Structures are given as C-alpha cells and as structure tokens.
Image (cartoon, rainbow, N blue to C red; front, side, top):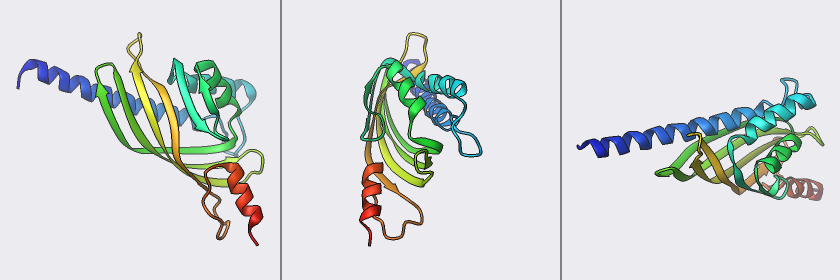
Amino acid sequence: MNDASLHERVARLEALEAIRELKARYAALADAKYTSTHERQPADVMARVAWDQALCFTEDAVWEGGAGFGDSLVGRAQLHEWFKRSPWCFAAHYYGSPRLEIRADEASGTWRLWQLAMREDTREVVLLAAVTRERYRRDDDGAWRCTYMKFEQIHLAAPGAGTAPLAATLAALDAARVAQP
C-alpha cells in the first residue's frame, strides 16, 4: 500500500462521514421546527431553524420535492421559505441505507426515508416512505453541502385508515380516503 492510496482512502472515508453527518444534521433540523406538543415553533424560532436547515444546501441547490413537498425550488433562499412553511406541525425524519459515491470534491447517492409526521391542516398523522436521490459538493469553506435533492418513490399512508391505499401525495391520500365506502 503506497501513501497516495492510503491518503485517497482516508479522504474518501472522511467525505463519507461528513456527508452522513450533514444528513443527520438536516434531519434533526427538519424535526426541530416543531414542539413536543405537536405545534410549529414560534415564527422567529421557525425562521432560524429553517435557515440552519437551508444551510445544509449550497447557494445554488436544486430541490425536486414534487407535488405538496415544495415542488421545484432553486437556491438556498427558496429552500428557506419552503422549510418555514412545510405542511407539518410535527415530523420525525429517519434516513438510512445510504449509498454514496465520492469523486474528489463531489459526491452522489441515495437515502431511504421513513418519516412520521402530523399535518398542520388536518392534524392527521401520516407515515411517509421515499427515496431521495442527492448530489453533494465540498464548498469553498471545506464543508460538504447538498446541491440536489429529488424525492422518488413517495408512499404516504394514514395509520388506522383501514384499507386506504398508499398514495404518492397528500392530495391523493385525501382523495383515496374520501372515495372509500
């Protein structure tokens, strides 16, 4: 084993760990916007936490959340606005099973998302499962940030909804529940 390969291997491991830490920070901030009594934080706290969450992304980041999850957004400012107005009054995000590929100061990967959340509009609890496809870049300050996030394979269900099917959006879940006999 030569020094160059050892250096490259250590740099790859450090990048993997930095991206995992970034994802853990993002999830913790996404959940910190809500109180233990299932309410949104006061506006000033919500804005601060949403900004910290937006700082997990590059200035030019692209978000492809789809219908009901921010749609298509570009840039940290738009992400901040979306994070302040997300549809939840409670959320618990669990990201796992990362598959990450590192290429020097850029990376890409996928995560599996399992989320328990409470809708602000109906106070209904939903389970959400999805895959996020992401790209990352080491910024000028040396920190890894997300440059692209796309939600795929979204499945929503309301616990206790009987035989209601899984749905890909909150609107589709509402429609499926209304259509039940």
